[in-house]
Image (cartoon, rainbow, N blue to C red; front, side, top):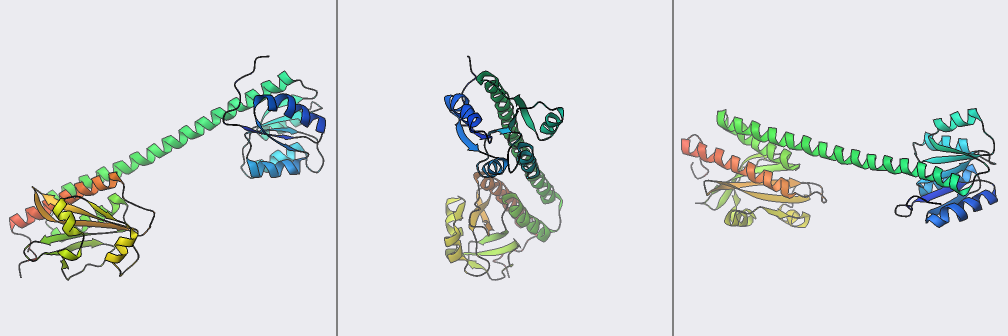
Length: 317
């Protein structure tokens, strides 16, 4: 007899029947030769427990059993929203049982006595449908993941476009800086962010705007901050939670802290910082690219303001 391909990655089949002869026939002559992982139960209660615990790929369930019959077992699984393909076996043909079985999501209905070929074909039909459902579920998850990614990408593009328009049209420079700080947190999914302006003559940084962080009035010495390395190398620096905590012992403990150079026309303007509270959260390469773009936009806006003479520099009284 020609059989379909064997189980994929040791598919598991649960056989639930109070008759030992039926259990042995199914396991020894049908399932074992095809390499299935096999579970057996003598009644619906035991079968229900195994179905809960093991989540088999297929169940072969007798209708009439002591303690709990097959239909009740399937009904309780359905109430728990546990969907496992099932083949129902019974010694008596009944339209009522068949209809109830279909309502319980039974894939096939086999009358006793049955032979190897009949049960083999029922197993193949049930598992074929189960595999298709599994593949469909995986595809749906992939599509949902892709949809979330595209939605996030659209939000990021819209945010950058909105900022570029604001840079070109706004007369409220303080509001623009605040929007840039907020955008940095949004684009990188950070919990807080800040913009620092470089004062090279005094070797210090002046905080211009902040999101979810106190706006410090006192300048920050450049040599006391990783910003010096960032501005020298023009490379983004990311610190883990331990390094971030040593650098910023006050306030809520930080998970990850990143510094991004703000550069316009090769001129070092300042530093953009973002931080998270969750230790496991870090900044991806995509986050860093977006922050680099935003840092460039902020630097260009600040430089333009300085060249226009509309912004008081930190070195001025």
